[in-house]
Each structure stands twice: as structure tokens, then as C-alpha cells.
Image (cartoon, rainbow, N blue to C red; front, side, top):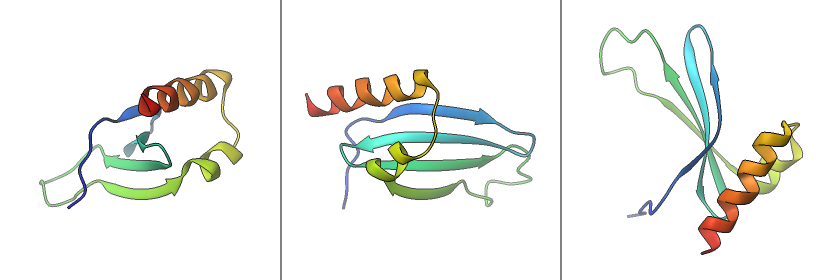
Length: 78
């Protein structure tokens, strides 16, 4: 079973129906988490989408997000 030692939120976008987070979960993996805002019950789970760091880097990001990614990667490296 995989374990999670640390996670770093790189980006957060609050939208009307959901909150979207991009989280660095390992040296080579980022998870996009879509959390519905108006859940009628706990049965409507968050949506998870994995991507590799290279794919995430190829997208356009603000300078702040790029810097957060580099810092988080350094912290993961130890």
C-alpha cells in the first residue's frame, strides 16, 4: 500500500462549484484534486487526477507557482 510522507499545495483555484488544488505528492507526481463545494452528502467524493511533474511543468503557470514547484521539489529531495 502506498504511503504519503508529505504533500505541498502548489496551486489553488476556487471556482463556483468546486475548489481545485494541484498537490505535489512525490518527486515525480502531482495530483489535481477537485473538491465539490456543495455536497449534499459525503458520498460525493473529491475527484483525483494524477500527472507527472514534466506534464505539469509544460503548462503555463505564474512565476509564483513555478517557484513553489521548485521549492517543493527541493524539500522532497531532502
